[in-house]
Image (tube, rainbow, N blue to C red; front, side, top):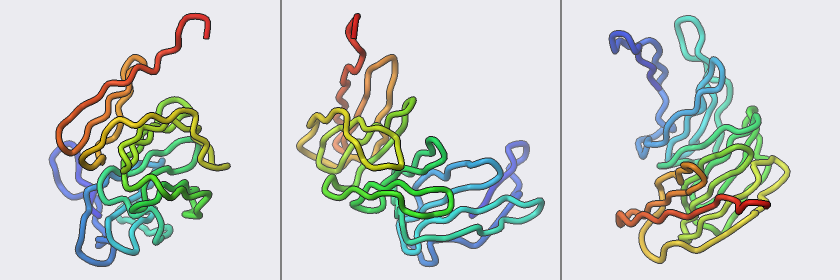
Amino acid sequence: LGVVSRADGSTRYFHPYAGKQPGIHAATPVVIGDALFVSAGTIPSSGLFALAEEEVQPVWESRDMVSSFSGSVLMGGHLYGFGGQVLECIDLEGKVQWSERGIGNGAVSGAGDRLLVMGGDGALRVAKATPAGFEVLSEVPLFEEGRYWTKPVLVNGIIYCRSSKGRVIARDHRLEEGE
C-alpha cells in the first residue's frame, strides 16, 4: 500500500500489503478521514489503514469484501461492495452487517441514500443504502452477455451501465411530475 505526494510524486507512505499474496489489486481505495479502506482480490482481502505522521498503521484486516475490480462505496458510515460473488455491507470496524448472494460479481456506486448495483446477472438494482439489510427498490435486467465490473454512473436522473463487451445502456430514473 503506497501513497504518493500530489506535488512531486514522491512516496509519502508505504506499507507492504498485497492481500498477503500476489493477485488482483485493481479496486480503488476508499478515503475515510485519515484512513484508507483497501481491498484486494486475494485473501485476506481488505483492511482499514490509518495514515499516521510518517507511516501506515493497520487498524484491521478482514476476509470479507474481496473486491477484485470495482471497489466499494462509503455511505452513512458503512462500506458497500462486492466480495467475490457476494454483495456486502460492512461497518468501519470490519464487521459484516449483511451479505446478499445470487446476483454475481458486479459493481456498486452510490447516489444520495441509494445504492446502484450492476449485478453479475446483468440486472441493475436500485436499493436503499442501509446496514439493516439489502432492500431492492427497483430491478431491471439490462444485459445478457459479458461481465459487469464498471460502476453504474448517475447523471441528471439517467443511470449509465456498461458491459465488458462495450455495450452501454442508459436507464431513465427521473420521477414524473407529481410523483
